[in-house]
Image (cartoon, rainbow, N blue to C red):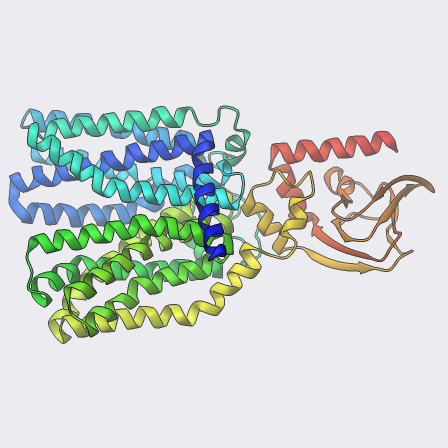
Length: 569
């Protein structure tokens, strides 16, 4: 019981830390404006479309919108990797302000329907660059893994609240005014969002470091596919840049695993658009009020899920908890199959709502921590495209299952298939937790001053690439004039640093050496000898140099160490 209370306190503390961090607070307030305005706008567009062409018009526009978004997301997310992410988000907001205002003019003046539909579609398309950029920027704003998880919980909670608040505000405005007024409200929320975003980075140097990609520069070195995503070398065509998110997922087995499970969950999410209605109206023989109650319970579960995800975070089993969330999306369907009552349906919806938040929060956190920063936004764009495709597949498959084998059997088929798929992936998820998200040596790297400013994903990737070496007391680690190939960190023991036989320094556990030859591309400038039996952790030059030189503060600290030693020598 004491452990549970401690986890609850830690969860609450981590969540509150998000809003004490000024930049995280601003980016979440910006997201709130964007999400709430979007949902209100969506209701207004649906109402307008229904007035024009009935349910058919609403349905056709919905299909066209989802297909367009699935195609657009990988394209627009490219801009968030090519340009500073904050600017991309502000541009998205301001462009949507213009498009929504033009749409409002068309609506208010009884303009051509095609103009209203075009503005609505363009608004959604431009919006697809916002969330990937936001998700990719969070690691640069969070101070540690707990704060990053807290930021994702806050974002998920905001989206859950927006799901209710946006339509509610839209409904009230439609009741007292008209569609054009809802459009104006949406434009105001985008202005609010842009105003919050513009203030991000005041004194936050990490934001500038996060936006290192240069327009047109799409080159990074090839890396280990188990720990990093890859990016094509050379400038390449824009099409190559657009597909980089998909290629990064395919090249990294950890990202492939997360994407596969995420899509499996969204297949059920798409199927739920069909089976929720069918369960209430046919299996339970209830009316519209019960359907509303089921959706409300689902939303309550979603809010609870965010807090549960935060409470689970201190266990550092993010990938395993992600798998648990996918199981909780599928297994509760079997409860309805076995016990087709309102009580069982409500219990299942609570569990699914909880699962939805756990899956989203942990999936985003995993992607942020295992993906190369230069391609992260495009990976989120690719995931968004895959999610939409998964939902479309589920929405198409469920009616076929209901028609061929019946509702209960169809629920059993889809629930069992996804649950079994996740259970087979549990060992791999556990390995992601223990070797990728919390690799041995991570704490050692955090304690090295010149490496401590690096982002959490960068430190985790470096820790995953560490080599080990034991050196007996009295043995020379390297000599003055040797070629430098690694940066060494002392895990246990002590060394002396000498030059021309003169003692320059003595280093102990947690301290590093060997950076001068790597950063200046010169032979070793001193001889390092073990005073005690040593355990060393090494970073290859191809890992060390890009990590340190790409981060302004880390490079500044490294240069100060180099200059101090050269002056001493």
